[in-house]
Image (cartoon, rainbow, N blue to C red; front, side, top):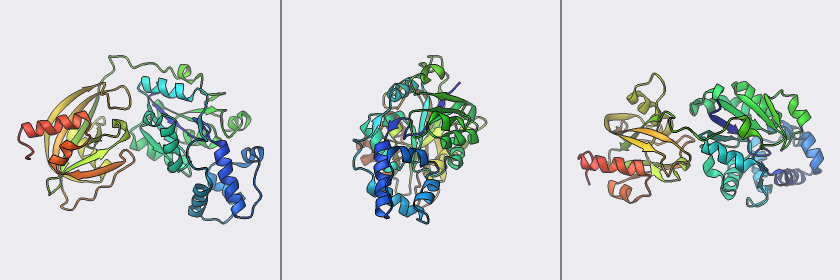
Length: 351
């Protein structure tokens, strides 16, 4: 059963070919090179894009290539549209409880605003953008998100996407909606080739989760520093509200071991004085990005280091240390507010 979808962005979910071609031709002109027409670009463009630019602009450093591309890409997301059936696929996958992640070579500065403008940003647990070689990145991505290869499919419109999926052992699906033709895609031997995304919900067996689905057990901690300030992080998964760091318990882990691992992965912090506080039965949380039922095992803990340095991974977009008074005034997700109030009720936190 497919529980996870990795999706390319350009040519798979959105039509951005005109904007990309405009950016590439701007780069070529700036270096005294002749521009490409649409057909020539599709014939010559390939991933990793470094190989394409080694041919077109040989010897130019990667950071300079990326800078030029950003300079010449059309301003604003207006020229980019969802491809046919993309919206339906995302909606049905979300309703079925499928985890969705974007894995794209396009810059984050373009992809995230485009997704927001098209109304699909909250469909994705993570948007991994600016990836030069997906064949190398995909292994770490699956590991960091605890996604099993046999439960994952990668949908893309280029041979490089299929090669990356095969490298990770996931189901590979090629769509003929983007940058490469069916004949080109078939040379990479995808597990499935489709003319567009229209048939995929049925092919993947997407359906709403049964009410008997086993709840997901997670751990999280309200963390204090030596100033008694609380660490709050903000993630798109919880409607951009502030909450506590944490994650799922892996098979064979104790709850406390899972907590220590998750906090270190998400924030880089080490914990001491770990104290269990409560379990929250979180059924269909309205703020969460998709249908879900969590058992939230909540803890209170302190930073082991006197001068803690928070280093967020890709799951969170921001963090802040707040006094208890300021934290209670913040836009908290419901489970975090419940946890803080329980800590106050039990005298574990003081105003």
